[in-house]
Image 1 (cartoon, helix red, strand yellow):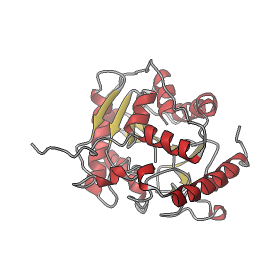
Image 2 (spheres, helix red, strand yellow):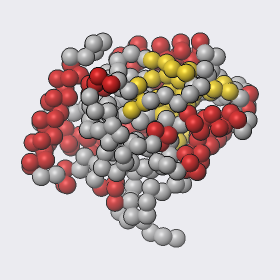
Image 3 (cartoon, one colour):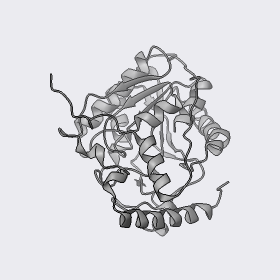
Image 4 (cartoon, one colour):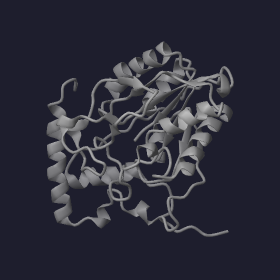
Length: 172
Length: 122
């Protein structure tokens, strides 16, 4: 057994961010916090299921400045409405609009935050039945009210409309 | 993203989240969560490492199949690197000079102004 270093624990992002905002002179962000958690068991095996993918990555917008890989935080590249695109090919998505770890990762390989290639392989291998024809983009607008009242219901409509049985969500 | 997973699940769609921010996802409370102890931005596996990415997806699929109930978190056994010193850096005030902070404050004000002007922002 190897004894781990004291710092080798999951990063306390909420505490770091609270301290950081306070030092910058800004008010505290309140993360969503719930006591009850819903649960729906699978209705059929994955090999017979259609899987939908939801991402927070943004389609590349040439007129919105540097979006990387490796770009500085670019709030102009954010999107504010749910979008959908085909899962038949790999789209040009970027993550310059979110706070990923820019010191220790470069965002050069989209497959680290958008597992569409792996999902396509899983279909070929028969591990999952099929992919929904479209994947969906979930806005990162920092408004829990907008997420709950607008974006989440829209994403539910998308998933249902495309006949999804299960959903994989991958924040970037 | 956690709130979206909760909404889908509450309406009959089983979900699994792949993520790197354990405290934030668990603070919200989600049905199923595969935690990769990697720097933010690598929820689906290591860069240019197909095996890592395949293993991360397979773990998510297994969690979908086998979670006994809500708030199921499974941590990926993968390590980003051996010494894990990357964990000390993110937004860590102890690592920042007053000049760093002043620069960040300036950037943050610019970001706030940009977001405020965005269409659809409410």
